[in-house]
Length: 175
Image (cartoon, rainbow, N blue to C red):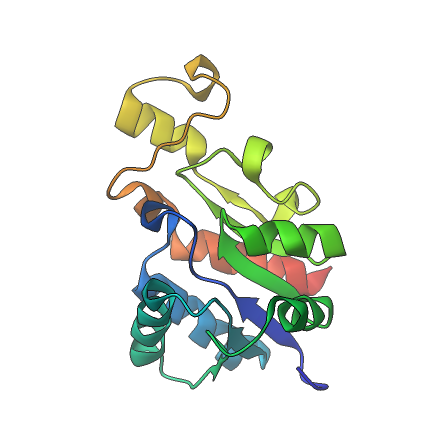
């Protein structure tokens, strides 16, 4: 990422219902650029679904991100992560790579419990709406669910509010 502070945005999870909305990703990315002067780099694999997701995010942004989706190798991604200020992502492989590298993760969780599958070193920067999802979509308290249960249902990630993610980004940058 050079010398400019860079936030990596890895939008895709292995399950589409764990992904946040493209409009919210775009709004958060614009906020990071406009409010904090960050460079936002979109990262992801060559999978057509990830390319489509990135294209939709870019189309909704006011500012141009650095679009690396499908253009970097895993080794290059790890290098980018190690030089970034953090990674914004739902429950995904890149969240775990960043955690292993000691890179902060802005985790977006409603479909999965971050206490089980989140970036364990960065739970302070995670927006956790799994308890609300358990109550709203399954009618149960999260403690009543079996360990590891997922709530991969349409609308579940809408519980992760843009303002809550902005607050976690601001907290990350103030540390």
